[in-house]
Image 1: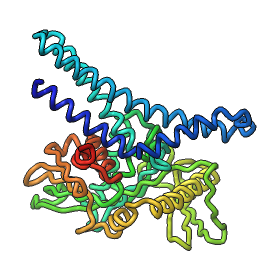
Image 2: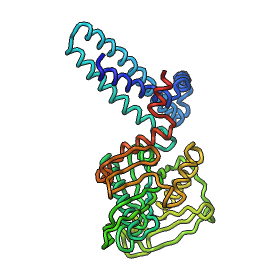
Image 3: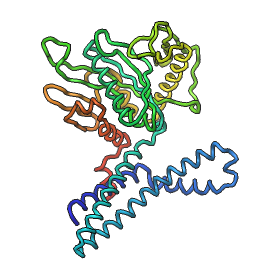
Image 4: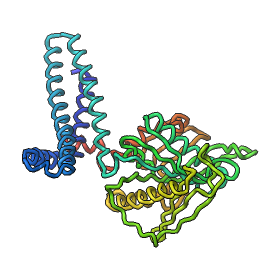
Amino acid sequence: MSAETEALSEQIKQSVALLRRHLDWDVATTRLAELNHRVEDPDLWNDADAAQKLMRERTTLANQIEGVQRIESEVEGTLELVELAEMEGDESLVQDAVQTLRAIAEDVRKREIESLLSGEADSNDCYVEVNAGAGGTEAQDWAEMLLRMYTRWAEQHGYKVTFIEGSEGEQAGIKSATIQVSGANAYGWLKTEAGVHRLVRISPFDAAARRQTSFASVWVYPVVDDSIEIDINDSDLRVDTFRASGAGGQHVNKTDSAIRITHIPTGIVVACQTDRSQHRNRAKAMEMLRARMYEAELQKRETAAAQTEASKTDIGWGHQIRSYVLAPYQLVKDLRTGVEKGNPGAVLDGALDDFMSASLAQSVGATRSEASASAQ
């Protein structure tokens, strides 16, 4: 077989092994058999909500398992066709088969990434909160650049972005801001961005044009619905009102309609100024507080909780997840996965998919090399 055929075959083999590992194949097939048996129970639909939940789980699991089986069958058949075509010297048929392998490789790559978005809240909308670190105007300008980066990424992927609240910097940029990103798997993708981000550049605010290092933190938490119960006692809350300000456009007004809520036992603080109505801002802020508390519970249950919390301790040296260097050279490097990009401009304009995919793969504890080893 040609070098390309062998390379495609090996690539697909590694991806399929990763899919099987992530699914926990034996457990998944046993669970599907159990669900298929329960579907035959005539009493299933006595509880319509439970039945619909079961059917959704069955459909998702069946699609995942059947998809892997179909890919394995297609690859086996295509490789046999390649060998036969090469024996007969039919170059046209060989090229058709190689094209089929390319299509299978692309299909399995998409399935591989989608398989990583299976966490409890991955399919939810989310809030993205950006805070400037120490450093005054430099850090505040960097925080605004990050906010724009995530807004651009979201828009490029067809997500809806809603400004929730923000505090302008003293000369430029922002001290903090929160946006809501709405769309399928918004939290699943963006949760990988939580942590401290470091910028190195020639300062546009320094007359001597000296190189400066700035830090800003990103916090991501899922939007939760009423089906998730979060107990919050009113006596644990401190509610403050203030005048809306910052990058709110037509939503900003001159009355004390903005709301800040502090959950005293945990120290969690949320704010909302997106509406002219204080009542609606309070309702939104309570929704955000429930989301923050839910995200905190998710972190406790995830194996990566310790690393995630450590990355949020300080907005400064030793805690950053990614460095963006604009001078003296051009490089963006993720310090968790080692992924590098030599075009910071594109990254700051929203080209984040490679970073997110690598971080997702790392979060489930599987890499291509490990998948390859387990397949042998």
